[in-house]
Image (tube, rainbow, N blue to C red; front, side):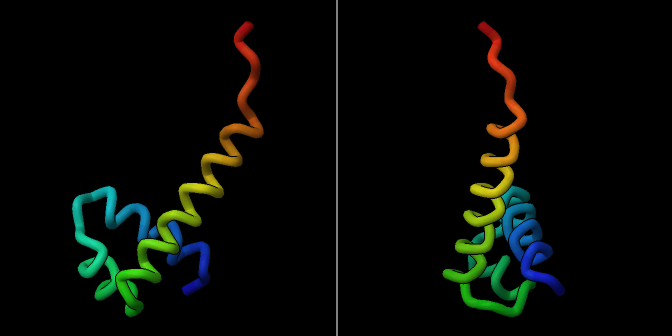
Length: 57
C-alpha cells in the first residue's frame, strides 16, 4: 500500500466513525500514525481545493 493510500484510508475510516485505535489496527500502524496520515490527507486536499477556488467577488 502506498503512503497516499494510507492517508486517504485513515481519513475515510475515521470519518466513518472509527476511533484512531480502530483505524490503526486496520492499517497496521500506531494510532498516532493513523491520525497523522489523516491530517496529511486533509491538508493536501484542502490545499488542492484552495488552489482551484475562484474568487466570487
